[in-house]
Picture (cartoon, one colour):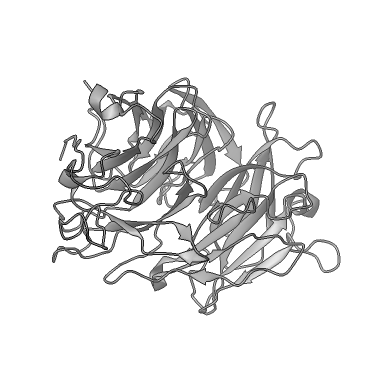
Length: 447
């Protein structure tokens, strides 16, 4: 499926349709929209579909996607991973939408013991304040039981693999990864936060000599992590960690980074000394609540909103304007679309339409479509009138069994003023572009 598709909506349809809207029944006056059919896209939206870059193993390509936040180019650059010992494809679109692609091999990362594989479940994260993308690799041993876990970096601006890996203490596999600026170090600065089994680890002072600190969070397993301004009065960012407990519901803990270094390898929390700023319990008792998280400003209020998924339960919750100095807001539960499977497997957020507020992207790769099991789907939500309305549906126009559209997704910069959506499927990547009303229509400039 190595193809590129680039179509516009019929000129007879009005330009007032919502972001990524495409008519489900074919009529321009329909109230329902459907983005499955690439041949009938909105007039200011187009999509490119690309296969596996030549030189990479095709078997598991498309399971993770990330791209740095401050890209010094007119177009876009992001990385697509497979689940094996091979490497990453880098997809670069110029300002006119023309594609250039290359690849990097895992063997290029320098470490002792030698790097030999990605983590079993590929973990990648983009730094929103730089062009760096981090990913976890296993060194020595086996991918399931390495001697060492390492964070390696890719750079979207230089198109290079930063080959010196950043070593995490201990052999535990990485479950979640995030960039941010916390108070884990007295001087602040950029951090990489990793959750691994029962550990919370932070690599700080990244611009000098990286230093790693860890503490034990006391739950059975780590699920995911995000970093953001969860305490409005703080000058630094805080860490939100999704954790599981055997036989019980999942939990999200929000904490200051300083508790990690203060614990000095012991339990992160100590009664009366170190504690979580907030505890978010699974509203429906979901055991995998916190398995996936993302942040954004969906209601355009200026506050930080937190989206939390429990994909095994097909549940996604959104907490608006989280501020740990006051009571947590009552969550909004998104209505699970009919037939959705693994709803919330990936969450992504960004300003895709150039209007006020971020959109929330929720993928469901286990969705059956047109009778094809696990064909997959993704849903784009906008906040309006106090809630999230009917989402726009994305998916392959020709559903295929086990295609798992939505097994990966990311919002990445396109130039300095726009963002685009990238969705991964089995051996295929879909990149959705939208031109704003005041932009030249790049579709007409493609080679």
